[in-house]
Length: 140
Image 1 (cartoon, one colour):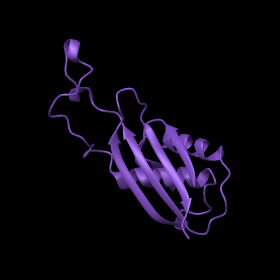
Image 2 (image 1 turned 135 degrees about the horizontal axis):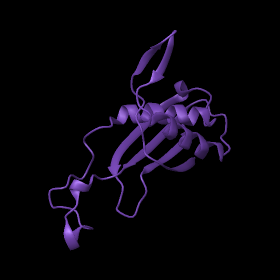
Image 3 (image 1 turned 90 degrees about the horizontal axis):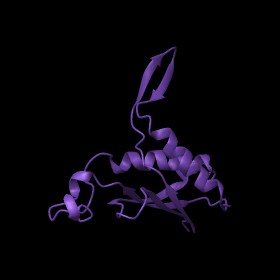
Image 4 (image 1 turned 180 degrees about the vertical axis):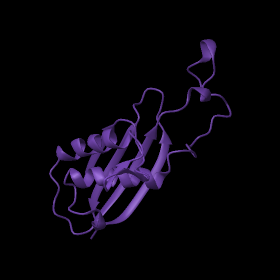
C-alpha cells in the first residue's frame, strides 16, 4: 500500500467547454493545480504494476469562516456548524481529478484498473492544511 498526503485545494474535474477550433478546456481553473499536486506526490513513490487497484481518499476541505464564532472566540466552531461538507464540490468529481493525477504520476497505467474506490469529504481541522490523504493498494 502507498499512502500520499497531498497538500492543496481539492478541485473537481467537471465539465469541459468548447473554445473553438475543436479545442476543449476545463471549466474550473483549480483543476490543473490540484492534478499537478497529486501527480507530484505520486511521482515520489515507486508503484508495483498491480493489475487491479483500490483507492481510498479523504478530501480535506477548508471550513468557511461562517462556521466559526467571532471576537475572542473566533477560533471556536459555532454549535450549528455542520460536521461534513455536504456542498460543492461533489465527491465524484473530486475523484475524477484525483484519479487523473494519480495516473499521470504513474500510480497505475489506466484508471480503468481502479476496481475499488472509497471517498470521503471532511473538513480540515483548524491547524490542518486542505488537501487529501490518498491510499493506493493492490486488490487481489
